[in-house]
Image (tube, rainbow, N blue to C red; front, side, top):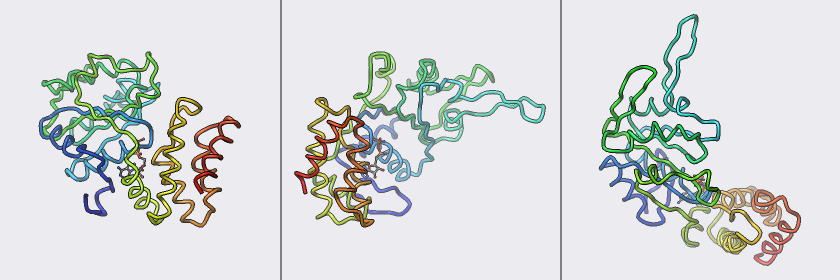
Length: 262
Ligand code: ADP
């Protein structure tokens, strides 16, 4: 287990993901992380970047995000037109990890700038400035997405996917999740264990009633509210039931699971 170091965000490994990250980084390979929301992908990247002493440039992708948002654009400043680097260009110029969270949300033209960066050329051509930037050795591109949300229009094309090495995330095993929730919330492990048990039952409802199971993030919220003095039931309503559904019948079903656990 990794020691808790104030400068390195806490991350409890669930398998061989830290080794894979180190090998990918050492060999200039881009990494693709897949998994449901709130299961540790972003924390993993923050932890590994800090552990390897790399700057981290994170972009939360959305459906309006274009290639120019990543590469940069000319802006008018005090009567002058100046080129301003976008986060991807900045990362390629200065090195470190560029993490594109929920990359499938971005506009399709984004893949055009990712392709030359994710093969052995490792270059970023900037048409607008006429530059071709070569990625430094410590530059690493990481993308993440949630396969569960995807529809056919929002998936990565094989020509893009096959430029990355991939890693699937899922909810951690119960004993590991108890340790994570305890560490993150400050609630003792004995009281976190029933929360993880409850989450396991809620996750079993996925596909029948729920679009997505209860995330580790929500368990941390729930434990934080309990530690702050709220009753378990009120904390579970606020942190587990309300964020998971708007449907009264589904919420009643979730409340039954909560009541059956405590
Ligand atoms: P994602 O990027 O997958 O949506 P995050 O990385 O933001 O999810 O994780 C949500 C929260 O869950 C984190 O802020 C952290 O509190 C907790 N978490 C999940 N997995 C781990 C783990 N393996 N080690 C430490 N914390 C974790």
